[in-house]
Image 1 (tube, rainbow, N blue to C red):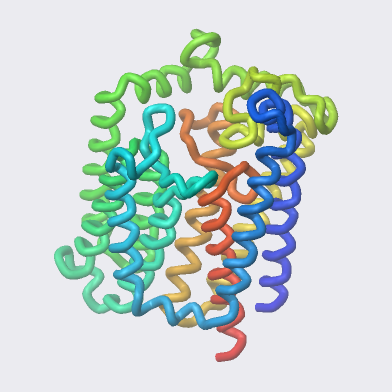
Image 2 (cartoon, rainbow, N blue to C red):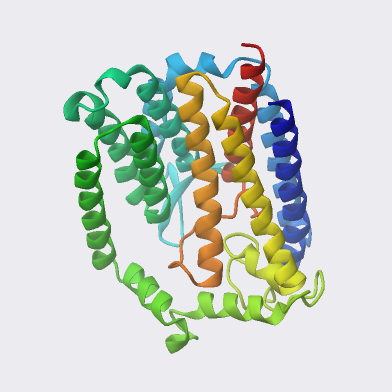
Length: 363
């Protein structure tokens, strides 16, 4: 297991280092224009990176199984925070969304904590309730109801991308845990119908679907982000225009250092750079599955699956959005995109995964 841990750490560090370089490249012009400091975003990112590494390292000092008795409490705490962030003057509103607590100059996004809390709760439930998992009321509905509460609050922010991510991860865990397929089909159909209604009710979500189907039809309107992303990726060619020489980051591509940082990587480092990022994530997932296969206790097994699913799914969606394979979603690229709460909790998740692997060595 030690080889897998070392390799996973190396891959994660490679992604983090690439993120540091590309965040500065993608954000320096924006930061200078808005804050008169080209290092503004980079300094904040490095602070959260250091905080995340410290939290992950600190987590390695104790056995991850000590979390299990607190799984339900962690989930309830996350639900309380998600509810509080919706209250005016408590939660910070930006661009029509209320998703953050403002703590001084920094922002905390409770949905990032909620994603991990849901995984911990579901892993604990599946580990304890294997004998009743095929029961609809005793084995299937409890995690569905708790996940539903989290999803309802995240969609109210509104944050449909995170809502879908949480739901997919939990459903996959339930399938692996032995839930009956007829129960899964029922909740899957209900969830698909709910997503359809949410899209129909909000004009901006409809616009995203229309832009996804044909972004060039209104390249200066609803298709602006996707067309600018494709222009960035297409401009890079095989080897890119050179590090720091992106044109799209000059206020053409919105969210260049967050949701669409892969597009800047593609423009500056070309197909070679883009494929390198994808290969790193593929290797990351493969190493994660090695740890999963060698995990012997049920709680650690389901917890590791949930973490790999969460990070892998988010990476896949971000890449898909950048190349136009998925509708636009506000999900950052793990370890690479600029971020605060997301980066800290992603690194905490890595700390948990490494802890699971380390603990197996002493059994």
